[in-house]
Image 1 (cartoon, rainbow, N blue to C red):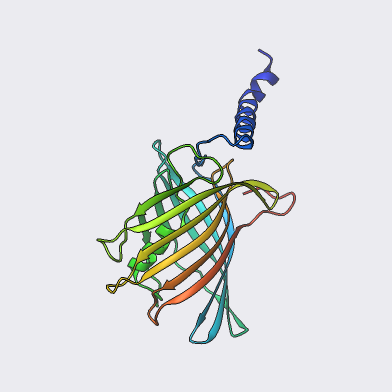
Image 2: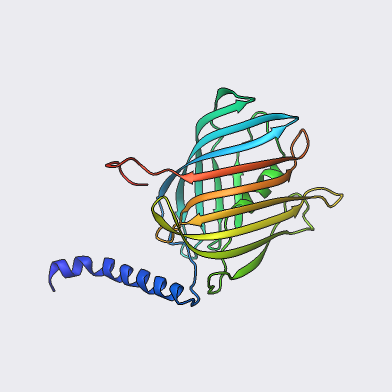
Length: 252
């Protein structure tokens, strides 16, 4: 066999699969959405979080590195998240923001949270249970069935705040959208969970873009409402974008 033919064989097969998936989607046929993660893959993200606390506008800018530390045969994966620092702006005055402690998330192949670990910061703004619930609700949850553009599915998640009440997630696949020059799967996801004994809920509405080639998130635009904190419930608006290296640098 020609060595050049052998070398391009796997790449050609992957290209063929991608073209078939694109053709199927264009025809409105159903496809199976799956993350094609790789152990050791690294991505860096830049984010902005905005809120208002007691009439004071607060904006947090941050950077974070995420690494796929473990990828099991059944699709379960472990993500190590390391904050790289940032800045906090309070009523227009900006100060440096120290990185928070690293965390690890274990998720099944659909994206459902299996385990979460992080050492608490000195002065946490919410309880560990609320923090875990936020982490569970923020991630895209894929369907285990083939879907077409416009299809929706519902998922129940464990609620560490009110154990007898599950968090409810609704996800809608919105097809292919281009983000930063990348063709990405686009999803609309809404989640809600009871967070108080009186039945009041926290909600999270997100638009999420995922790179079908490597399974990593490209962008999240989200709104969290009635997030319980030590000073009372607050609303948050956030944008998280995968950072791309400058031309000539090694891609992440």
